[in-house]
Amino acid sequence: MTTKMAIMPGAASLLAAFTLSGCLTAGPNPEDPYEDFNRQMFAFNDGVDQAIIKPVAQGYRAVTNEPVREGVGNFSSNLGEPLTAVNHVLQGKIPDAGATVGRFLINTTVGLAGIFDPASAMGIQRTKEDFGQTLGTWGVEPGPFLVLPFVGPTSPRDLTGIGGDLALNPLNYPEFQNDDAIRAGTFVLWGVDAREGALEATDELDQQIDPYTTVRRLYGRTRASDIGIPYVEPKDASEPTDDELDF
Amino acid sequence: MKLFSTIAAALVVAVSAPSAFADKRSEAFVQANANTALSALNDKSLTPDQRDLKFSKYMNQFANMPGIARRVLGVNARSLSDADFNRYYKIFETYALEVYQVHFDQFRGESLRVTGSKDDGAQRSTVESVIKSSQTGKDTKVYWDVLLSNDRKTYRVRDVGIELGGSILWLAQEQQAQFVSFLDRNNGSIDKLIGRINVLLADMEARKRDGRGSAYKS
Image (tube, rainbow over all chains, first blue to last red; front, side):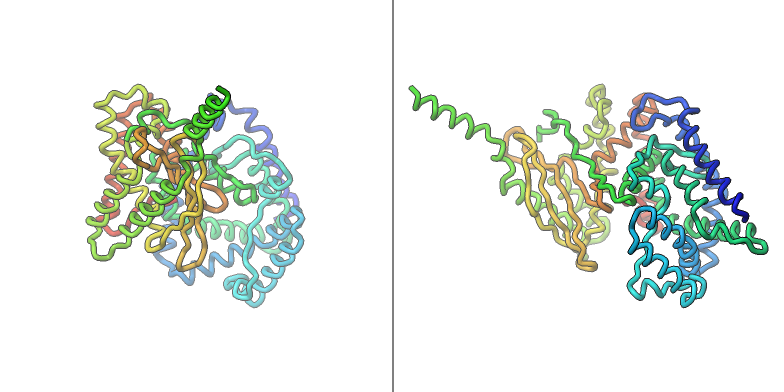
């Protein structure tokens, strides 16, 4: 992939993040002004998932055993380490950046291209940072909740973050033979592995009264936690009604 | 006369002092009942059905289930007739107990220790507790929104907050967000909500039958 190609999706994502909320019509729910649009996209993504992605992930689980899947997961995660290291630096977490670079070097060499994870066994634990988190630590507010086709739940901040990650990832820059095909292949592998790992979680989601609302609330909570912002939902401040106290 | 005023004022303060509620009784209520419910889940002498029944019985003594059922409907509860509420409550209770059982199941075999409490009003307090995992040694904080009945004799839990990854998940509040959202998008139809709960209950039953277990987890 050329440098230009690495930066273009980033720029496109950035542009989308800034223009999307302006194009959409805000609804009456202040917690979720684009709810109608989001729900349509949520249903679309669910349809794609049920028709294609989930069956592929189930098939992948059926034809592989756990050690193989663990190796694939380690390999995919290892490719994300340089990006995590860059984001650690941008967040001023220099020791964490050093540890992540160390992990990458150990797992890429001793761990046979990241298939094994000797770094964890050596006590260097995996951390994960993205540019959305970096923006969050810089004080950028997430903005309204969004669900986009194929992207899923996000926010203008995190959508910008996706673009930033594409542009910042050092592994997107080296040019070699068939680099685009190899990058596309590793992306698909990462996607299938990630979806396989989430099979139980999405089953749980189907058990909710309103899965969309669950995802929206979970997304805000998880991202705040990723950034390190305490997300302490206050206890319901409403006074108990007489009915509630009559027992 | 001045002495009489002073005594009267002191009496008023003594009677209305909110600190009277967050006493050892509400803490003892949580300590005893939460551990009883947890031990019911771990009772190996029972069949799964018997365990469910025992857990349900304890939870009905522990939590204000009708109050929770009404609260999770939000403003929609006001317009509900008694007949509609009873119809809804019948399946809500089954569904909520199933959900709570799965949430509590993560603490199966562990014991809870109450660490303190604070007043939130004349008939309401928050009891704080910790469950230590015997496997990981990790503490999970669990918060209990406790009500005192109008006759000041009985305590019941209104909501449970579980600390997860730095945030607190209040189960009834979470349910309320979903129920209200569902009703908002279905013209407040309690029949549609009952239909949705029935679908979920049928799925939960099917999962139990074929050994997949409940998919509902936090």
